[in-house]
Image 1 (cartoon, rainbow, N blue to C red):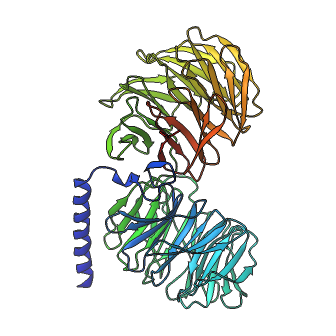
Image 2 (cartoon, one colour):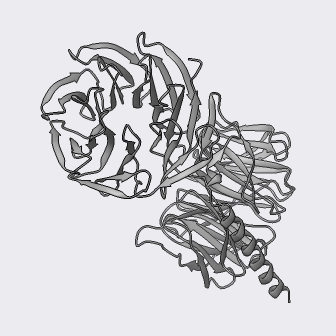
Image 3 (cartoon, rainbow, N blue to C red):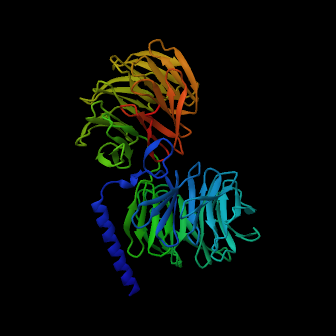
Length: 621
């Protein structure tokens, strides 16, 4: 009878969620204003998600990722709070058994304890290396952490004081968890072993050997009798916790015929099931008693961290598509998808009229209102990692992974031309100010000029000895500037394709170069941690500015400033006449890919590996 009722409840929930999704087709999960960094007026995308954990009452999810720990309503997918303070991405987050606090582990070499209700930071637990995991004891009084230092640390959860350091692993500790009675700790390590330790003394009690690659996850069963481990060797193994005997080796559900690393292994609350997720894996589910496979829950390409809800009804998985999916266990159906957790955004730009912010996400180019964040439209046939709009905004050129460029009509989304000719990955694409021609740069060491009206190749600009990182037109359409990993910037005649000038001075790869609005200057930046300003006529190096590694440079519409996107994740705005730094915007926790001005020059939009796009207000500069 109870099983029948749970099926009815699950079907009802699916119906409710399906109706909600049908009534609200907008990708609202991409937009967030919680915890915006200084100077930002909008965030598109919540950033990369690394871990998920349910609250004890199953009502909330703690999602650790790029920007901190997101607290999400588990029923409706709406964000509740963002716990910020970590200076690098969060690797794991977990609720205390009473639900009152949250422990997080981060790449910034700290673990932190937060008040789950107010979001206040209570304690910072300092480490010497990246912290991979943080887990509460069953009574909530202590926290165990594992890090890249190959050590396990035990902390007082009330005071944040260090109680004990446990040593023995010979490589990084990826996973730590207490036994159900709190007497033991199990750890998984890059040394290929899982180990059991006495939680009071730190004594090593048992070593589980058999995996041929690093152990990424280790979990106790709820009764403490078995331990499940996951590894880069593509297996999940179940062991007798008392004797160390191997009980089962579980077959994972590969999505593709390739290496399927296991990232996460969890037991259900009642101990009936074991679930795992990983690279190129569905969520795999097995019978915990005999190891028999039950069913896979289909994600997109890969499902990383997995979590069972404490009420026993659902399982959540973090997917590589930038979503957290929740499935009902009883009937194996997907009941909710929470979007916006993208692993990286390569392209973001204002539309030519300034009324939209265009972002390439997984399923194409999406356009959002730059003021409200409202979703405006999706342009199909534009994917990949780079795009450009024609000056009149009627067309878009999008780089495809298959070494092609699609010219698409923005209004209809129909493909007008496909530009083929490059023999390796295309890195950049840009329209000429006149609107007819398109220039592209590629790993094949060439830039190419295309007629966007006919789709024909006009010129191949050959001469660089390494990848062409960027290519851009001069304001008068007469020349093209290219930047290359061969440490040079080159100027070409756009009408004939002839090489005109080589600008030398960079001492490492050049990633980006752009003309000033009047065409008299060129700014370039790259791996040598400099920005260089050149005279476009003579090629003379007018100014060299030291900064961090520069991924992109762009002049403001009035030419008075230029912006750089840097490898340290910052966006910097510079005075183009003096080279003085005017403003630094900090929001991307990984490297920033690009920074582009709005047509009126009052805003910047930036993208990067953080998985979010930020719109910055520079009106007061």
